[in-house]
Amino acid sequence: MKVFRYLKLFYDLVRFEHTLFALPFAYIGAVLGAGGHISIYQIVWIAAAMAGARTAGMALNRLVDQEIDAKNPRTAGRPLPKGVISRGKVWGLVILSFAVLLYAAYSLSSLCLILSPIAVALLFMYSYFKRFTWFSHVVLGMILGCAPIGGWIAVTGRLDMAPIAIGAAVTLWTAGFDILYACQDVAFDVREGLYSIPATFGIKASLAVSALFHLCTVMILLGVGLYLKLGWLFYTGLAVTAVLLIYEHSIISPKDLTRLNEAFFNVNSWISVSLFIFTVLNYVV
Image (tube, rainbow, N blue to C red; front, side):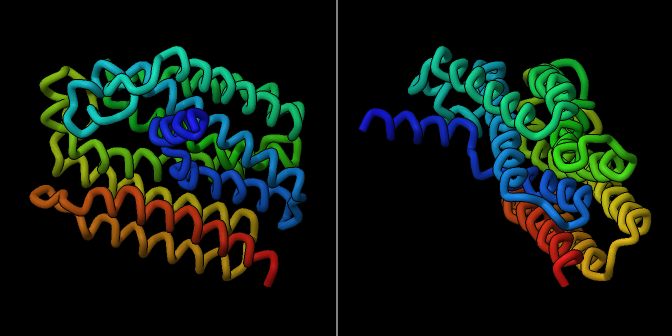
């Protein structure tokens, strides 16, 4: 039973279900790169790579931010600040997750393995960025932006302009919703000397920046569709994405952040999943 207890603690530590944000975009990159023909082998190893990368990144973030999390009422109940799990065990999870990422990259293509240290470096660096720059939102976006690029390389063995553009779209999408999420910690970040766009420029300006990032996300994906000559189903998925982003911003205002979690978790999960489904249908129908 002790094993199940630790599994639950690790689950609470890194919230595995949030891999749903990035994994569909990794598959979007793979599906587009393969022209709709992706093997079970590739599906499995892409999922393993994404799970390894995200778990390592989240566990590292929890280790680096342990003292900060302990001071923040919103995060003080996490396993590390509460002391219900040791730093040694979390470091073990980090090492194991990085090993999974590297082996999965090796199993997919030599270029994936060669480029994987970039993802590892970004994962390690991200946790420190908010200590000296509000650019940390974009760095987090770049980490998730590696997902479609890695998916494309996994099935093609090469890097092209299309996956780089999709990666840029995912970068802006992620940075946009991370800015929204940071709005709830403005007072704490200012008090602790941490940097974020909301803490630096205020909530009203931050909501405008987030909306601009999300507008650019849709425009870049539109350009990708035109560049790859995709069908109407892809554009239908893009329209759904645009509507969801508009909804996300409509339920948040500088005076009312009560629905922030709904915007951050629910809406963004639907965005990545729905765009993936319509991208697949583009080749199936």
